[in-house]
Image (cartoon, rainbow, N blue to C red; front, side):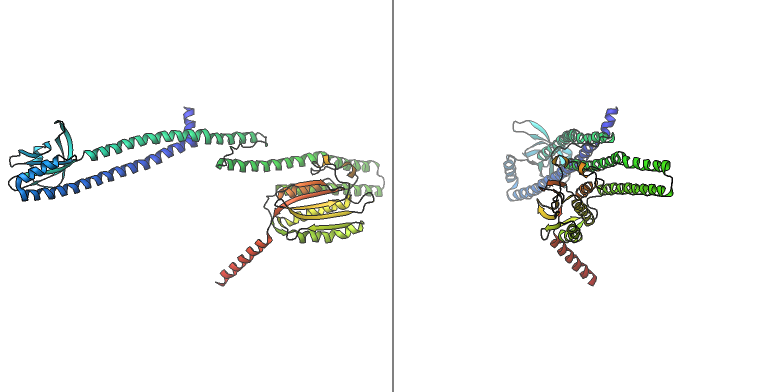
Length: 484
């Protein structure tokens, strides 16, 4: 009983019942409509035929008398059709016709309209058969009575065929409903069960679970694809939260311990106001450093949590990069080097201009910090170009670069090379670059500049001419509406 109750609650069962009810109702209505109109049409044809017969036979009687009428009835009665004829005298005796017996009560009635009657008809082998007909009787001169009718057997056969078709069609609909239920239950419900199983796996804490896709590109595949992308996004955010927690637990433990040790040392060893002041100033510097690290981590987390469409707009990359070059070129010259730019004309991207500027500032400052060592003049190049349908922005330097085996991990938080640990910094710069690139639907590439390092990231291309033309059209349309 529980199994049947569970079955009755399934969508597949409800859809099958709905399909059966709707389709059966529509089909029944259609068959009844066809049956009734077909019967009405055939009766109209029968009536029209009888009217023609009734018009012709009395005329023959008027021209040739009873002999001519009997000859005409005998001739017509031999035709292989469904017409009925009966001619009787004033005493009711059969003179001519193809009807064996007609109810006496009907023959005694006065002349009137068409009526349905049952009669006995002679078959080809002389046997009698009970039939139904539509007939009409009218009187002739001399006491004769003429009956003209039409057998309704053909109409009855058609009605029976339609009734049998209705019963057969209901059976077909039942079978189709069962087939539909099996199909929906086996395929659709299986896909839904897969989604439920994956959801339970995710609720148990395994965010790596993904919904299976059949590869048919149907609505379930599209739903599974969207849910999988949502799960990937959630997994990235959760992993980022976990990374932040792990980073705080491991990488901030040392500065916090150092801060505590400095305070304990001051309390234990400091004797004068100057020594206490020096300890407080060092503690304040260490606290400011910790606050900067926390702010950087929170900033990266906010970027990773942003929706990819937040604050995105068409940006011409050439003016943006030229403005940064004007700002940092003097600093590069002060370091005995040069900062060059190489931007493809008319290159635009849909992006968050503030974040892209922050990324470029971060990369340029890293290049100023590490490039131009070992007596080599500092050289920094910022470039932007089209590649594979995307806008790629790169910052290259001639510094020591990053070993190939470390390029996959330096974009993680707090990862620093051994030779750069003596330099100021926290190892969060490239993490910020990766977060901003992913926000824009791109990735970060680290390549050997021989010598030095090239850091590249990609953005979605934008056609500024089309945007300007659309804005002009919108402006004209708005002005036209205001004028009206």
